[in-house]
Length: 480
Image (cartoon, rainbow, N blue to C red; front, side, top):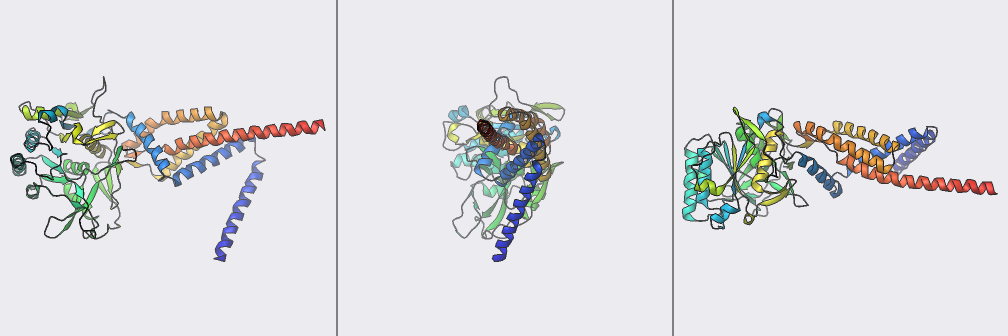
């Protein structure tokens, strides 16, 4: 290990000589040039430190706060890609519906069957049921739902039905994959001839309790079969995108390449599969199943004077989202809505459902979180940071602006000016990035401004003290 110590000492000596030479050279530069160079080096150091600490809670929190602020600016905005926009209908089991049904412990299966039938009869492209169906509730009500699903599977309707299915930890500790929960309707799903599909919600809570991310898929084990089998359970947004674009077989093939060989095997180190949703919209599927950000633009409750944006559906414009109370659908099915081309999501929003979560747009039921996730996937695909080189160019340009600004004004005015430039530049740049499925990483510049302001304030204080010391020494020399 002696040679290792010698190399370390030589490297430290070389660095020391380099900095000493730069310091001597810098003393010949004008004051403004020397200040600019110091500022640039300080800015690069701050940016590098933040990049190294990218996964730290401090940086992650700042990133979440910053992106929440940007995404909130797009609340209620029109679709970025109008040609791929799809309208949504939320069949909402709200407080009024829940109480009209006698506040049941489970969503009444006969009423759920009525809502599925209403969506199918009125031409919905895809119907997503965000209601737990693992446990049988009542023989008569369960029979009504079974009959509706049998009809859905046999009628040859162009509509597709997506049922959300939960997962749980396997009883066998040797099994590395979670197991897919079973339900009393599994036999119908098995013989649905490709009209009924299973998906996972796959949303995750952040440290502050907000939902910002959703996973694309989940590997599960089918322990309900004679021989356990590995299965890829896609997320509802990913599955809906595949159904709408007629790419289900392509999705199954892509996910199949990422699955382990058995329920007890580890996840393979397979390369990411780039699955194309539509033109210029794609998702990177990999074995790590990393969560992707949800670009929230569709609020649950409208503010005063706020209206839903519209999308083109054929020759007419329709709202991006319509909300229909579940009780109205069940009690007045003759009041038909034209749902051709719509994605219908059936879910609960009443307090007892325990399906309300905090998001960057405030409290929202799980069904509407799924709608925002679907809208994100269909519009921009997987949200991801800018590539390394483009991000580096933007950050270096920012460092130069920041250095010149702080050289011109003091720390407070400089910070205010830099923040104004960031805020004014965020909206057009972020919109440009979102059109390509990328979000602009402006967290590092914002944190750099804060650190830079602190350093410049301290530096100014030290410089003023040094100036006072020099003045006292000159006065002392004159008095001697």
